[in-house]
Image (cartoon, rainbow, N blue to C red):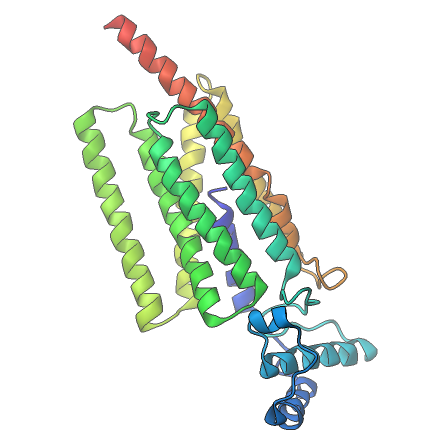
Length: 319
């Protein structure tokens, strides 16, 4: 779960670097100009449903949508491959949702995360060392999947930014989750100092990062590089930790599986393709495959909490 948004960073960077030929084609541009002149200037939009209007589909957006499909048909008729528009494949809009499959699977990912945390909370007492940190993380996770849902529902500049900012919060906070876990066994003074130093550093960096993107320049490349760097750092850190403690904590295979499966699923994005039935693309299928991972993630922390508890019990008996 914690590496889902790091992989999203890789995906979005790849999409950002790919030129979209659909919206730059003469077919599309001429269609858009004619649609705006003949339809939008007379302010007629009778075919738009109330929920589409609620989701922000105005006359100009309707023109872009209809011209997109006209361009796709022309490309197909001449044997040319399906083009992308504004960095995205053409999707069939359902109930006003721009990317319906990604919306649905984002919701399922959020529900899966909530369900995994509830199972963890029912088995692990609230005074367990990781409980508070995981409680904060689930709040950030719910927020992130919420804005992922909104962003895939209709792509506006502000929904895009909130999706990206929420994703980055999860990636950066995941580093602190790791720091919190590996410092459980050290003396209280060093533990407080290390957690405080790392925590404040990460908070300052995140606030500075958001300020730069929102107030100075929204730099896609820089934002994705930050996500990738923190994601790789967290992945390597957890993998190293798991391999070091493998013999006495065999349940760490669950965390290893989370990391490796997420990266394996990334292969779907490498072989990107136009949407099946104009609904299911590689990105939405990737969202579908990540749905079970939060259950594995929280199962790891459930087992880990019992391990920490048993070790503390043994230590108390020896004293």
